[in-house]
Amino acid sequence: MRNDEPLAITVTTAIHHGDITALRRLLADNPDLATARIVDERGCGRTLLHVLTDWPGGFPDGVQTAAALVTAGADVNARFVGPHRETPLHWAASTDDVAVLDALLDAGADIDADGAVIGGGTPLTDARAFAQWNAAHRLVERGATVTLADAAALGLRDHLERLLPGGSVQDAFWNACHGGQRECAELLLDRGADLNRLPSWEELTPLDAARRNGFAEFADWLRGQGGKRAAEP
Image 1 (cartoon, helix red, strand yellow):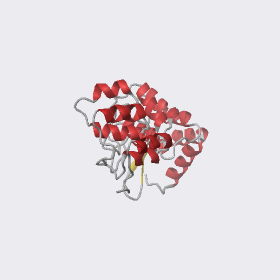
Image 2 (cartoon, one colour; image 1 turned 180 degrees about the vertical axis):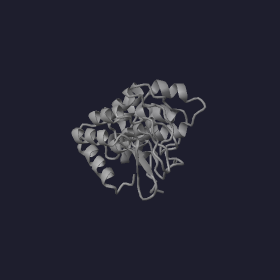
Image 3 (cartoon, helix red, strand yellow; image 1 turned 120 degrees about the vertical axis):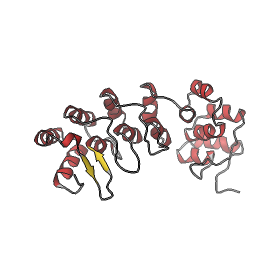
Image 4 (spheres, helix red, strand yellow; image 1 turned 45 degrees about the horizontal axis):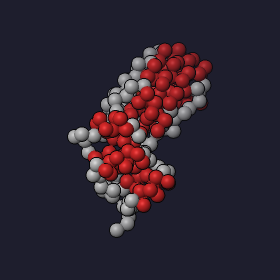
């Protein structure tokens, strides 16, 4: 259904307001609604679980909303139709909505589903890249596969040392700075990381990444080591 249709507007409003009574009535009156996609003017389609996990997330009574949708037949692993293939779990991770993230996992969501807007990766990839630290740590607790970049950004030293052989020290260092993880950053500098090299994915030095994410004390430490911003000569 199109996003400007009355039913699409009504069900989206019910989900975003946490109106469980209205949602259940709509689901009962429209048997195919739980598995429907709302299609925008670009032709991109999202499910009602995507509506629930859409930015900024944290909608009222999200766990109860997820339960109502799943009970009515919603697929927790349904894919967004558009320029990427993210599942609702990717979107919950991207908005740091830990409660709904847990609800989706409990309902059978694939914790390592691919298709992230960030490099086609997993929900953990999105959480780490968008600095959604609560969701990232929760995904690790729930058993998500951890990459070298994840380990560096989250300060998971045991994972980092296990994954580092054959991996990129430089990419790991940038992610350690992105996550404000000084212990990991020090280890990676000792392993030969370049303090000021720009990554391939954006024009930010490790110092820039730390400052962007609010790690002021850590950024000061990087500066003391000779760290520079991309705008500096």
